[in-house]
Amino acid sequence: MAKLGVNVDHVATLRQARGGSEPDPVTAAAMAELAGADGITVHLREDRRHIQDRDVMLLRRTVQTHLNLEMAATDDMVAIAMKVVPDYVTLVPEKRQELTTEGGLDVVKHAQKLDRQIELLHQAGITVSLFVDPDLAQLKACARVKADYIEIHTGTYCNAKEKARHAELAKIEEAVKAGRRLGLGVNAGHGLNYQNLRPILALSGIEEYNIGHSIIARAVLVGLDRAVREMAALVHGS
Ligand code: PXP
Image 1 (cartoon, helix red, strand yellow):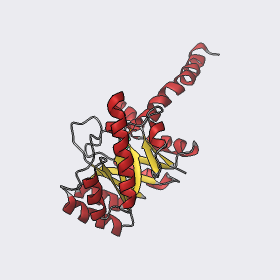
Image 2 (cartoon, protein in one colour):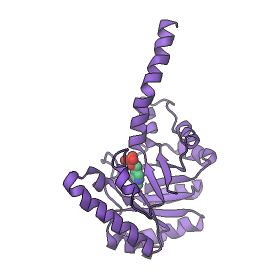
Image 3 (cartoon, protein in one colour):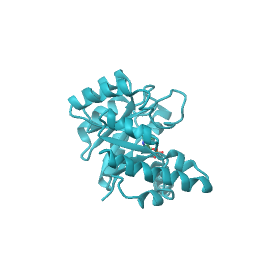
């Protein structure tokens, strides 16, 4: 059965908007697990715009499923991962100005550095995944640097207009097959929502789907009715 990894970064984004303590992504992670999540993902960005070091440390102690730490492939972040020892590290490209992760890691270009970082993470007992575009040269490079998993970047498929979407889906299908042929575990994520996930689910060979924004966006709306009712009851004294 496929697994669902829930990314709780956006809960932290809401908290950081006021700089307080609510809503707490650690609480959100526990709720996601109670609701059936198979794993929890957080992206500790270099600028700490949402998830904080404190969140990662607490999640390491409280997550009951598996903790997937997404991070830039820098030596500073690798040092943090070696201290936290999450179950998985997913290495992603990171640019300071971007709104979210844009595109996959260039494993071909950075093979030497990644090879060394993956070896260190493996020595700490951490399973390593690389976030990559559905591109054969990149997948081959992932196998060469001894990654355990790839996470196929589904963002281009998700953003594609109707006509181009079929071709993007075909690229993902080929990448899943190629990844497995290369002996890599295959995950997928970025931009997946309640509509565009269906065709991806129909492909076989993907172990885990990492989904964040669409779940948290829906939670705001499906939870709003109850939240307003509770506040109205308080204000109206009923
Ligand atoms: N996978 C990776 C590598 C990501 O960087 C992100 C976004 O943080 C996700 C999955 C989740 O994407 P989304 O929030 O669009 O579901």
